Image (tube, rainbow, N blue to C red; front, side):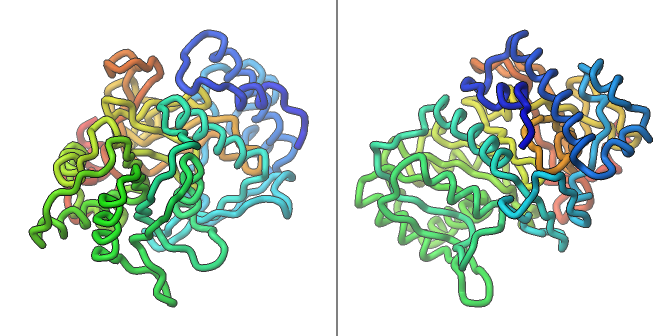
Length: 377
């Protein structure tokens, strides 16, 4: 990889939520540096920027990154865009392909290391990195068969490094042809974990955790009391089960009621294979933007940048990736952006409230259609 001193310096920040002028200036330098890198090392990128009125001189003067041309995350479902750094050492990951198309993303060693370092810093910040405390794991994700290429499975495997695994149970078992949900296996694992007394870490899709809790209730099983330092860290959304989704407050309440896990130890994470920067709930369950990134919201009709409090598509900026020009990317997720101080927790960085995924849904209350937001705007 080319020498990118500002990018490397931003990647090395240890405090993930320290909002200050020094880090703002470093972020601006890193974004200019990385954008110029892709102009030189990603075929067609410089011409694409020029077509939108942005030359190298304009890039060097830019500090409002909402004005940097963006790619849609869905673009990666049809195209694999690579820079010169995406060679044979690059890691290729795919999305789950819930809508029938999978995104393919390739990460060179420096880019995937940067994304993992961000997770390291966030787990350190919240005190979840406990190398001396073995844990049992319930992984609400795909049991791997061979090499792990699915982004969600890769993430869950990676998260197991923060506490030694006594043993692990997968809820989505591999059956030789694919994966299927095993609620009875998940329940049995939780019962055994409660008896063993070690902290339990539950990672993965919220839908399958909810289905497990529901099955326990339907079977009339008594509540369990897991170790108080157990941790629930969810991610990946409800996928094809969005019509059965519930407010996360209800899920967290049931986790406390049925498994004895305190509310403060129940968190959700947001990210994607196209943009794996980690957005993690604070103690008040809001997704704060770490110092390694910036977030904006785009109007659903004309894609203009929305002010705080107005809904639209999430737009993320981060100068972490050299293997692909995915440093300015608009998702299909709908959200509202808020100023950091409005949260009420100890963090000062901006945070966003997820409204759902754009498009139609079986349950209109769980995923707001883009057309509805257009009417509201």
